[in-house]
Length: 225
Image 1 (cartoon, rainbow, N blue to C red):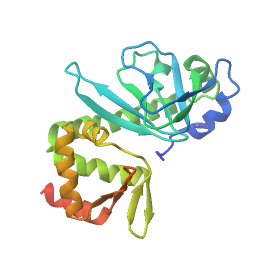
Image 2 (spheres, rainbow, N blue to C red):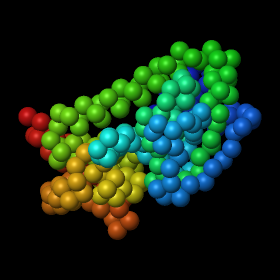
Image 3 (spheres, one colour):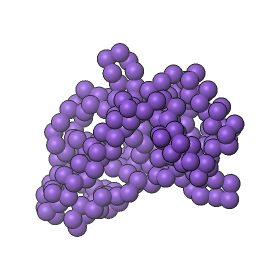
Image 4 (cartoon, helix red, strand yellow):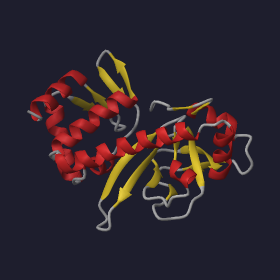
């Protein structure tokens, strides 16, 4: 799970409890590939993942997609609604998902009452820095190296260590992975085949990935020399 940023007296994991009592809060259920919201569409809400997984992505005018982040149970997303800004990203359910949908105005009132606006700004800056790194990697790294770095990041953020490697309990299709690195599914398939041959990753029939972190890290270090 992603690390929660403290919001003064309120932390992000506390928000489902606090906002459950706010007017206008509701639970919504989504199937895989359902849209939570689309970039450019009005949506004055923030969301907390109750169950399931959601990805956020940017879509260029050409139709090319870039996966920005993945959110799991307890994560807050859609925070730009707190600033009254137009959404640039699109949010899509990766699995059957339950979300708590919260009016941004109600959350802003709670944060203001707790004196937490500065902490919220720090949280948004950290989120922006992560997304800027994603974009920088897309521009500066070769696509095979980008895929290796993103798999390493997924293992760190979502992995469960075991005797045979670090298992990422999020099912990614090759299309999802191609969005992460900005290349085609065919090329991603070629990269993954090479990674498997080098015993850096393994895939289960349900598309869960197991990462052998030491081997993958050593390969990344060599590739960046």
